[in-house]
Length: 376
Ligand SMILES: [Zn+2]
Image (cartoon, rainbow, N blue to C red):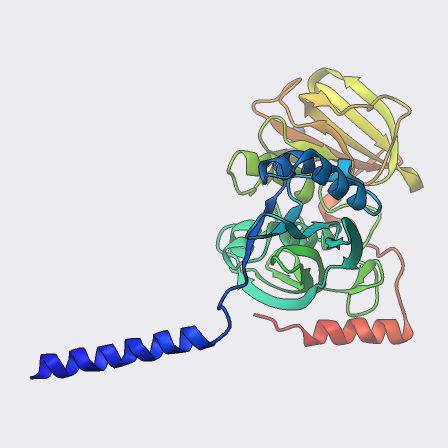
C-alpha cells in the first residue's frame, strides 16, 4: 500500500517536471563555449577549433586593429563562443587589463575594447613570530609579494634576517584589486607595524610613493639595516626551501653574517666602488665609498657581481657580490665593516636618521592610518 502510494507520487512529480520543460524556453543557449589561456598562437588555436583559412584571416585582421597579436602570452585568457553549427559568435581576449571582444557583423568582425572591471578589497592581518617572519606571515595567509614589500618598508630600521625573536608581533593592512578571474593585479601595503624585542616598536603608513612613521618621518635612511637584504636573498633561500634566519657574530670591529656561499650581498648605501680585489686575509674584498666620509667593506666574498670594479657606481640595495669563505675564513660568512674617515664604527649602534618627512594634513593622515591599524 505504501509502496504504491509512493510510486504514484513520483510519477506525478515527473509529469510536472516534463510539463514545465516542454513549455519554458530552453534552459541553455544553443552554443558551445571554449575557454582557456594561450598555449600556442591565436592562429593555431582557431585552427584547432575548426576555423578555415579565410575565417581565421578575418578574425586576426579584425583583432590586429586594436591588439598586437605577437604580444599574446600563455597566461592571457580567451573565450570563444560557437553556435551549435560551428559559427564563431563571439571571441574575447583579455590582455593587460583590457578586454578585446570580436563580434560578427555583416560578413566580417567588429572589435570593441573595454577595461576589465576590477574588484577592490583590503585585508588586515596580525601575528606573532614563532620561528621567522616568513613562516609567521605566510602561515597567516599573507602573499609572498606582500611579505617582501613589508620587509622593504622597514629595511632601513629592522633586519628581519637576524633581529627577529620569538614572540615579536606584527600587523599589516593592504589594498588589492582582482580581475574577474580572481587574479590579484595590484596590491599595496597601507599600514604596517612591527614590535620586536630587539628592534622596538616600528610603525609605517603609505603616503604618495613613500612610507612614514607616526611623527611624519620618512622610513628611508642613508644606510640599510643590513648588507644582506631580505628581498634580494629571499629568492636564493626559497630555491633551497629554507626560511632565512641568519646568525651574526662580532669577533672584531665589524660584523660577521653567517650565510651560505652564494647568498647575495647588497650595498648598504649609494656609493662608488674603490676596491674589488683580493686583499690577504679578507680574500675577495669590496670597499664602497659613500657620502659624508663613510666607507663600507665586504670581505670573504666568493665572487663579485657583474659590473663591480673600481670606479663603478652602486645604488643602495644593489647586489655587489656573493657570500663566500675566501681568504682566512673558517666557513662561509660576510665580514662587514663601516668606517667614518678611517675610524671603525659600531654599525648596529649608529643613529638612524630619517631622510625627510611630511607635515600638516599628510602627517595627520599617516598618523590616523597608523592609529587605526589593529595590532596584536
Ligand atoms: Zn669577520
